[in-house]
Amino acid sequence: MSETEQQPRPMRQVRSFVVRAGRMTEGQERALKENWPLYGLELSGGMLDFRELFGDDRPVILEIGFGMGDSLIEMARQAPEKGFIGIEVHPPGVGRLLSRVREEGLENIRVFGEDAIEVLAQCIPDNSLAGLQLFFPDPWPKKRHHKRRIVQPEFAQTIRKKLAIGGVFHMATDWENYAEHMMEVMSAAEGYRNAAGAGEFSPQPDWRPVTKFQKRGENLGHGVWDLMFERTE
Image (tube, rainbow, N blue to C red; front, side, top):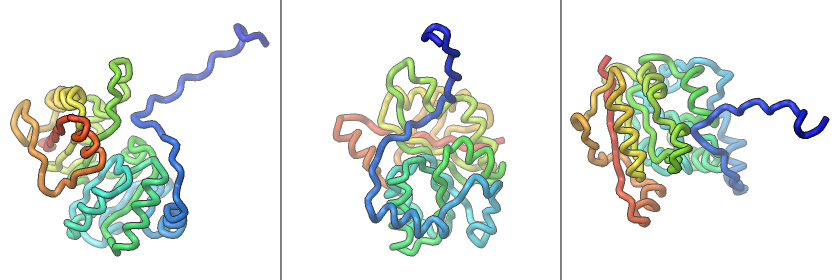
């Protein structure tokens, strides 16, 4: 068959992330293998029961894209009364987080290594989360790629269904254009209230650790913007 006669390739699903090549260390590989049965969660497990998962009715925070896990570890250490579920698609980050969770004896963290959209749809009950965190997601800075940004009107409503009334969707970015995009999308989203007031960014709370992405952005002269939107209905 000639090149002009070949069947067109099916369009790939647009994702909000790119799985970047990253070599795992021996320790990360070992942690992933040994600790996944203790702390790992699978899509095949279906809808979660948070009480069964953490042993009580504690508030549960979900973080999308925890990177290498340093800030998630710090938040879990500072708030042992809360449960934390992290989602990360990059195996080195998952391995490193699992290694540290085991070393520090933290019992309030569980981990998915899957696409967040699928996790939300298949595993997170509606009206269940005290908070959802999205810190320094890929900004997709080129205009033609803005559609790949995870914060979009449809995503805002997906999140709202998963948050309990009063639950907070907390975003942070060091890209001003993305911060403005987030503000525009969330200000227009039904069922939310900006915790800082209409059109205002929130100060960085003391309990959100400074991440390596934030440090890198600040070293490049970027500002940092936090947005906190509470589910009202």
